[in-house]
Image (cartoon, rainbow, N blue to C red; front, side):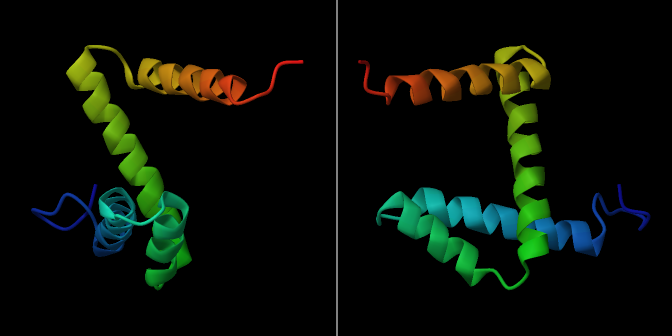
Length: 96
C-alpha cells in the first residue's frame, strides 16, 4: 500500500505494475509468433527491474482473480498451474 493518501500504490509500484501489464498485454495481443512478441515487448520496456517487479505483481493479481472466480485459494490456483505445466512438459517428451 502506498503511504500517499488515496493512492493504492506508490508511484514506483504503479510504474512497475504498468510495465508488467504492458508486456503481458503486448504479448497476448500480438499477431506475431509468441516468442518474438514477448522478446519485443520486453525490449520495449526501459527498466528491466520494473518489468520483473511488474510481471510478478501481474502474476499475483491474476492468481487472486482466478482464485476468486473459481472459489479456491491463490495457493491452489498456483498448484494447479504447476501441475498443468508438469503435465504439458511431460506430454512433449518422446516416449521410448
